[in-house]
Length: 91
Image 1 (cartoon, rainbow, N blue to C red):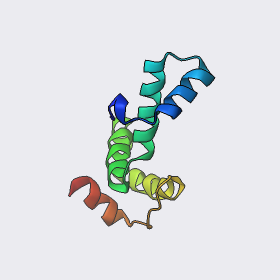
Image 2: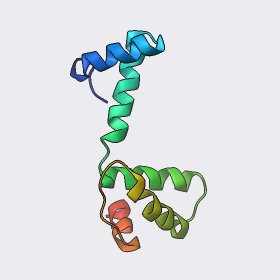
Image 3: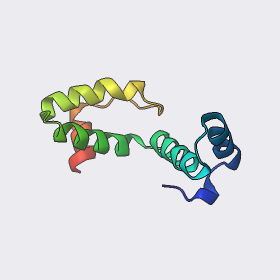
Image 4: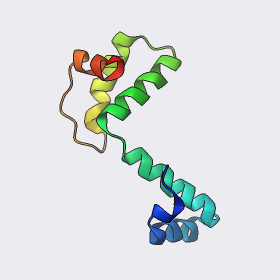
């Protein structure tokens, strides 16, 4: 996560003012959102795969879900095959 000094001060101030959150909480919220949208395709695939495995999903289902989710994400991701997704997760 980013250090508070690296966060856009105006955005932190705006979030704190518009929500009534304390500045420290607003800064944490801004940092979380920036980190969420800053994920690369590879980071997203690894994180989401682990999350779905913890929920008891099997890989065959996970690959289908990931392939369907990637086009809806903020990053522009080329369509990845099941093999490419496996390689991201397992190397």
